[in-house]
Length: 253
Image: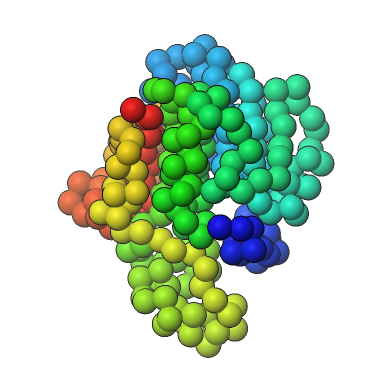
């Protein structure tokens, strides 16, 4: 697939995503903490080379560069890459315009990949996963954050059930509310996500983050002892198929 099949004006459609610097920094802390947990130490993380697929404006990668040996941020959105490159340079961080389905990275050349809320934006998510497997070294790790199709509020447009209804109706839904012409995002259900990552060994961190939000720097989302944490625990235990977002660490076999 070529770049023309992408939603080319993503950064202009979601300006709030670029503006939410604090939110992205918090996400970076959680990502780094999950890598430190699965690797066994922060010192081990410092030895890893990381490729961020869908780097956006680069805020997350600037934070991750404090913990990883080398970080490469890749994004197909030229506007986002321009924003990323405007930030203060770091010796172990660089950004490159590139296609998630044809990463500008050599085979088996990186230790880690970050793929956070990207799969629903690419024209071929199976090709995306093949590319992640291709660039990872044997035993390499991919932090995979994936939105569930079955969630009450669609996260990009903040419209109820937008991701649940059939695609033709979703297009009509957006047009009727003056929010766009086409609904590009293509979310998967839990079973479909499991099929998507079937080529990897999956280490599920979803429940662990809910149970230990402080350990994984997610207490800003789930304050320990709060009603929100209790509700998240109940959903993860009794209704895992409708958890809004899954956090999985994928290991290349």
